[in-house]
Length: 349
Image 1: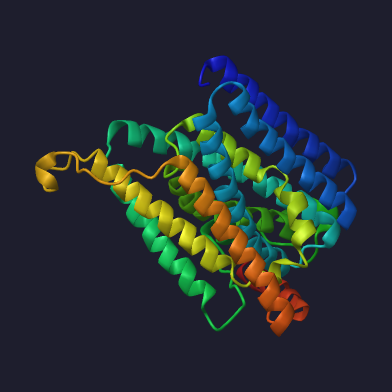
Image 2: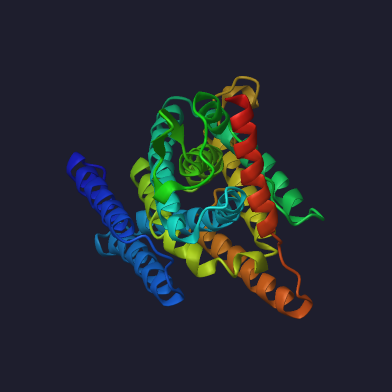
């Protein structure tokens, strides 16, 4: 499963899918229809399921179960991340026909960043078993934060410019429009950035925070770097199409945060139990392993699927009955935000 040849074929296949997706987007920038988004979303999800099921065919049922549990978890976290993407795209008033390109570049950045995090995480876990304690504690903390955000009275997500965006604003003046989707242009004898560059930097910087949640979560289900990487890659594949498919439904997933909080909390507990079972810290049980219950991977798969499914179903039912939604920024606010940013850049320049 983890031979160099298998890794090479897998990475080449995933890169090929991303390149194909990028070529299609660049060749014809457009707003995808619901039918187009639905077909591609089904294709990528089916591709992931076939990949997972194929492991059973190769007589690796345990790996197949780990992959499916990891894929469902990562896909659910990715859907939750779409809320933030939606806020960023609105904050920078990205024209609809350029949104596909921005999302795809952001997803490609996310895959690279997660690959780095996976390599570091795998090396740390292989060397120091106590890292499980850190991952578990972090996921439990994240679960509490996600649950609090889901219960907040204010439904709007806020966006604050990250260091990359602030650095870009200081480095170059910013144009007042997207200039046909270019990242930089030369005008009035000087090089200028466009909002397209800023929004890509914004999404790329946000992806770092996303990786901090998703990587510990998947390591709580499997310690196989190959499964961790493929589960993340397949979760990111098709995310662009999924964005346009569920764009109108995102605001109705009012209980998704609670579902994700339960899943992250469950995996956090599982990681702590794994840490206790492999304990080597001298101040815990005299440095000896602790006999604790072991949660099988298939149990994790069932719990994750049921929790996310119930959260999504309850969200739709409650939204239909009460009309409650998670509200995003108003269009006028988006335009004002971009104008404010451009004016501030001109003053700084």
